[in-house]
Amino acid sequence: MTVADQTAEDDAVSGVEIQLEQVTKRYPGQKEPAVADFTMTVPAGKIVIFVGPSGCGKTTTMRMINRLIEPTSGRITIGGEDALSLNPDELRRKIGYAIQQAGLFPHFTVSQNIAVVPGLLGWDKKKIEDRVEEMMDLVGLDPAQFRDRYPRQLSGGQQQRVGVARALAADPPVLLMDEPFGAVDPITRGNLQDELLRLQTELRKTIVFVTHDFDEAVKLGDKIAVLGNSSTILQYDTPDAILANPADDTVAGFVGAGASLKQLTLLRVRDVEVKNEALTAGVDEQIADVREKLAKQRIPYVLVLDQRRRPVRWAHRRDLTAATSLATAGRPLGDVVSTQSTLQDALEAMLAEGGAVPVTGSRGEYVGTIDLDTVMNTIQQLRAEHGDES
View: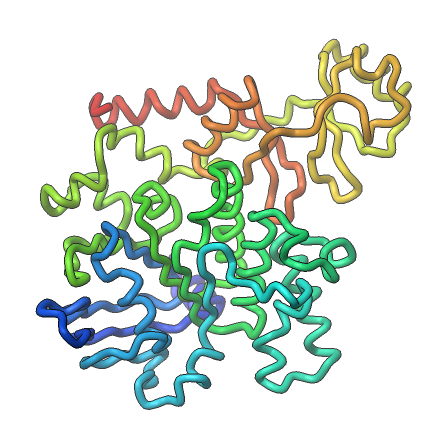
């Protein structure tokens, strides 16, 4: 990387460095501190994951950054500014916060929920409206469809997207995430993880993310802090370094068996060959034209794309015999993966779908398909490189 490239990369980072120095939290009546002498630097523009068993102090540590929990002692700086010297409310308005089950205000609409912090900061009405629309589009929710809905009218995954949009609405440099995807089903969870990684490539925030799921930590983290009792740092390193060389038996327990296969969570779909063998058709195309294309190419299926070129359905040629529109022909897609998805996500999606799955780009647009042969060849290469540890 040249000096110019490095400068451009640094300029693209909107996050700031966080430093915690000997941060301790003691609760009255408890012999041991909840957090003891915690010292760490969270790099600007990176995702750092706190992972550890329940009760180890990881959430307490994270909440001391925005002073939802006040530290007993120690020093916290955010972008070089002493967080403990600021008014707590002012501090929290500079830090996005996303939690499990979204924590949305039930009596507010989606747009009102997203507008909360900009409103507290005194933004004018037009600026807030524009920002709400921008954030909804960014997290993949059509403003026209979802703006006026209430949280109860949304799925769990949609609620979490609104929660992330609200946390980012005022463009804070730091985002804290406390097991934000823990309450949704596995497929939705994987999609939300992909969405977060996609957003991070655009926004480059500093993100501190708490989870008890090591696989999630490996997928999302630029660095992982494996924590023990009282938030003791057992190992703080990159995911690949922790997978290759766990610091001790406790960390090895988090890594678990099959470390070579866990390398699939380090590789993204963008790292392997995405094929362009599927026939695609816009949802408004004529049935007769699509049937002619299928016959000419001698393939059985067409992938139907919506007006924004997002994959929505698979249709077999026999489905087109009686169909009047591609909008209803065939079956809705059960699962897709994005270029941000891991190869483990892709493998799980293929097993669920029974074959190749569509791959989408940064805005959900179709870019190709990935098949089982591609993933299996990659697994064989990894096992050859690392030995059969599975």
